[in-house]
Length: 286
Ligand SMILES: [Fe+2]
Image (cartoon, rainbow, N blue to C red):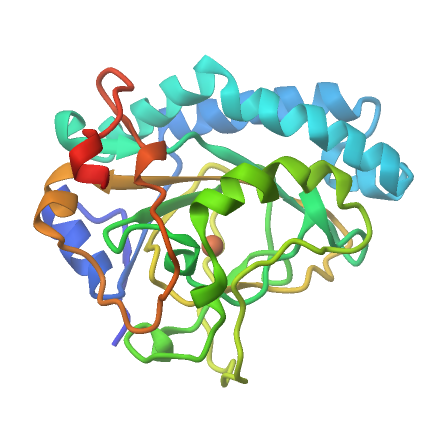
């Protein structure tokens, strides 16, 4: 059974427990999520001017489009305002700030039947935990413009606690940081970086797709098997996501069950405390 909770008033402790069991939480836009979406729109609209960002893919050549993203994405990710608004969202959603750590918010784009490599990579079916995420990681996701069933992600609930054959054994987070991530802007047409992927066919029906208005917040476990569905909507999807861990969960090794992740290393060093942006202690990370 997979439960989707809407605007649930449960505590963060109870919410994490349910998320680690495979449930999904969805919230209406909050004041801070609306502000984060407005901030992202402002940056994207300036970067793609005079084009409306979801339609800009039809007006720019591939290399010019990638050039815009190569500037826009890091500018958004590294902007202090982005981190402040993530902190505000977490507080609005009732987390305990002293115990809660987040990774910088990513700005993602998924073009419609257009580029499919590097900065516009359309992810295949995966769990984030195949990419060295801790089993206690929760993902927060929100659309920046309107989305529809053809340009969101699909969850595959039967596989939440069932192993699928995958190539995560070949993924090493430290190697990715040293090489893979920095070369993303050079990968325009063909994706050559090694990514964990499925090594068997899964049954894709039924799946769950959550459609919210811009700034609506979807929270799910990093262990959920999910797919960015091929975008056939004719418009580029713009979204924001960020990862969150609770320090007590990391200390107690509480989280979703690990059914099939065999990667090396951990992303824990990337997380920043909500109150002061401090990292987790090195001993805990190791
Ligand atoms: Fe993912």
